[in-house]
Length: 265
Image (cartoon, rainbow, N blue to C red; front, side):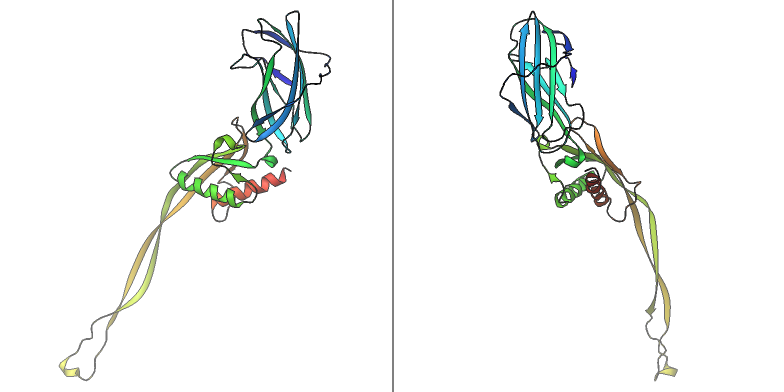
């Protein structure tokens, strides 16, 4: 288990215990972030100015957690962490992470403490709830609405309208630029009024002439780059328009996301 000590006046130094201590029979608490839960229990014992923290956390989400970070705070502490802990690798459902650390601390208030779940990042194959953030570029607004509709209809992801509920976020850029014009020429006949003369009153000669009708249409190309990022800002997946796509690029991108998430199972 990796540990990170934050610069607090009450914390002088921290070391990992060489021999993990058994965890006393302490009732676990359920910690939830973005709808993802872990259960954790922690025990602290103070001796000669040092405080020893022993604990364990269990993945209760039913899905693989890519990264989770939880914080140990003193009972009266409002910000920062005495210890900031995280899992060591992909955290499978039901698996347990343990810790055993000794810190040198000053002041009162220990060993009373509590746990707080700070950050949760899911593996791509475990991500369900996605928030579509602002899409930059002149075509960003339209692209964002298309991405939201495609995610909703994908059958794989759940679109959320509140960022606090999301396990991942889609961000990106989209622009439509004119690339030229296509001129279409159409040939046709236009009748001219029949001309009659006194010498040929009994018959008329209809004269016609050929005219060309030209129509010009502008052509455009969409440029789009989107990324799926974790709550910490790490890129989990990305799509850009250098990839082959027949038809709508937003649809190609979401189709790719669905396929990639299935491949990483």
